[in-house]
Length: 246
Length: 330
Image 1 (cartoon, each protein chain N blue to C red):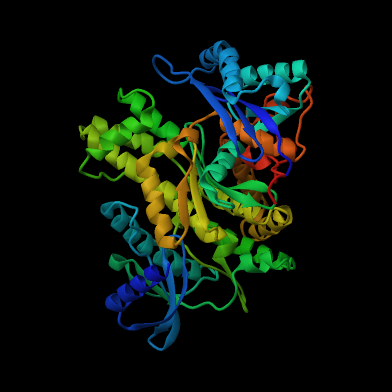
Image 2 (tube, chains in turn brown, orange; image 1 turned 135 degrees about the vertical axis):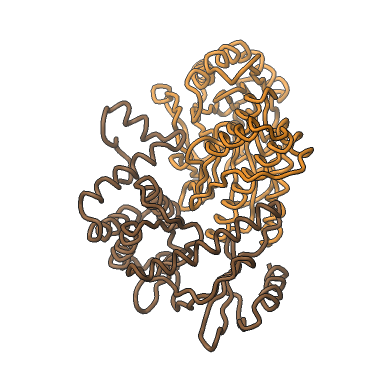
């Protein structure tokens, strides 16, 4: 990992000398995050570095596409009242995105500490998801690692898998993924946390939209292979049988 | 953990397997009979007929190779699911009969859990992130709070099924994965295909359709295979890397029938190496469905006190991985 970090730092210096990297924040799944200064502002460089396991053509195309789209999504989210880092510079050819540095721990760390007084935070996350969906966007990778709890409240980060799409199918998948992420990392809290999310969501998009999107999430859950819930549904005729989270 | 000796029976899909293993991880025998359809995919009823015919001799051989008789056993384990109903019924019926006749406890085993446990055993990994890929399953999973939690899975068809169906459609026959990979190695040009990663989940159905369309347009079969394999495997490796980043696990393994794929395994190795994560795939002998994984997992379960009464030992065709208890892990 250290060899990788050094290599990426060198790449970054060559590509964008005006960004002075001070520290590697993390090497995530698809990008490395560096903390540094950019035009005298505290900033984060998100560098989608080449993935050696992928064929070059495929890799270049994916990194370019995702960098450009993430910048557009961030800019658009800001105008819709969703707390996200402010984008400062985009260089899609090199897979580089410079944005505002958001101070604070990840939501996952707060939950892992067992501090469960987070209901208001989850309601607000629901509000933000609602605003994104209302404006024709989906985040695409909602997890508790992708929310920073800044002093001013939760901030959604990492729109790398987001998309401009205004279909209930995509919105349903967006929420389904968040629910699944909560289930896999915080199984004991999932029901209450998700209820708060949907409460905030309803505040933005209304009761009708909430009900229809919840139905969509159920439907999506049924699609996974070997889902016991699907069998229960078939057996009982209608509705969710028994153990489903929703 | 006390040492127990268990006979395990596998019959969830195309394989009827039997094995004797101990909770200390000794595989005393591993005998498997695989049903291969003359044409097309696996028909559950035809596979179950194969299993019925194979059962007696496979079990007898598993016992004799282990040098044991039913009286030496501490229990009988059987994969009750997930899988195809008619196939599961054969294994369950045989296991119940042996348990009743020799008065042995019956141990229910989840087939997916067994793929994971045999990977842990043969890699020596304590707490790995697991990529489980087979004809009927594609998931990225790891142990959290008492269960194997699913971090990512296919939203439609499994990866193995995608490649098998492609192979069948273009007349390569089964098993599809090695044949598609062989042609992919001769490919030279990569064509863009739908690369669908949704968070930690995957979708392969659009990829399959697009690959077949590419072929119809006159693209060389070798190049289509290369594009298909490259795209599908890259998607899966990306999801595995996401799960590693999210969970912070330091070990990575690959299990299930597609674990024999050298191309996928190599991609995972490259990704893991760059992240400083240890990578080892399951031993090839235990990659596809086999009796040993059921016997070993059954032994772990029995040593932890997991048994099921004959009345409650119905098959569970839709038994999800994250619904299975794994009390031998904490």
